[in-house]
Amino acid sequence: MRNVYARRAAVAGGLAALVGSLVLGGPAAQAAPPAPTDAATARTYLGELTVQPEGSMDGYSRAKFPHWITQSGQCNTREVVLKRDGDNVKQDAKCAAVSGTWTSAYDGATWTDAQKLDIDHIVPLAQAWRSGADKWTTAQRQAFANDLTRPQLIAVTDRVNQAKGDKDPAQWMPPLKSYGCTYVEMWVTVKHYYKLSVDSAEKSAMERVLNGC
Image 1: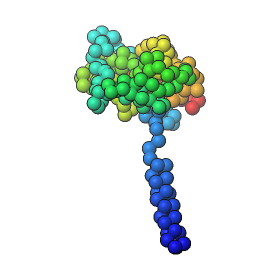
Image 2 (image 1 turned 180 degrees about the vertical axis):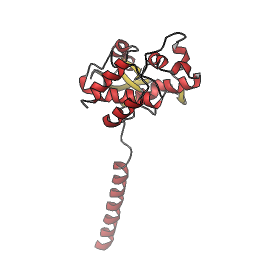
Image 3 (image 1 turned 90 degrees about the horizontal axis):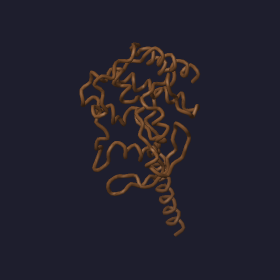
Image 4 (image 1 turned 90 degrees about the vertical axis):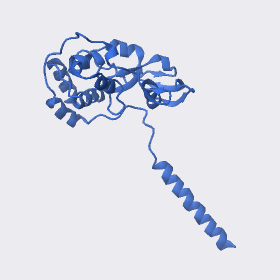
C-alpha cells in the first residue's frame, strides 16, 4: 500500500511540476507598448533617416488617418491599447474599459478612470504628414494610425498628451526624464520603419538623448 501511495504522490508531484512549468513559461502580461530598438540600434537607424525640412500642412486632416478602427469583435484600437497598457483592466460587453489601473509613462501619474487617458501616437499624425505621410495612400495612413506592432501607440495622461500636440523631440519630451531614452528609441523605431524624414533640429535633439542612453 505504501508503494501505491508513493507512486500516486510521485505522479501528483510530476503533474504539479508540469503545470507549474506551463504557467511560468506562459507569456507575461505586457502592460506596455512593444519594445523599441535599443539605443545603439536607434543611433544607427537615426543616421539612416533622411534629413530635410518639415513639409507643409497643406491638405492635412486627421480624417486622412482613419482611427480608431475595429481590431476584433467590438474592440477598436483605443480599447485594445487600454487593455494592453493597464493592470487588471475590466471591459464591458462593448469592449469599453470600465475599470483598471494605468500608469502614464510620460509623467508617472496613476489613473483608475480610462477617460483620463489619451492614446498617444508616438510620432503624431500631423508630424508624420509633414515627414512624408502626405504621399501615402489612405490605407497606409490607417495602418500607421492604428499600428499595434511597432511602439507607436501608448496610453498616457490626457493633458500631458495634449501638451505634446504634434511636437517632435526638439520641441517636447516627456516630463518624466527617466523615460527620455525609451521615448526617443520609440520615435526612431517608428520613423525608421515607415521611412519618414527628420529635420535637423529633431535629429540633433535625439542624438543628444541617445548619446546618454
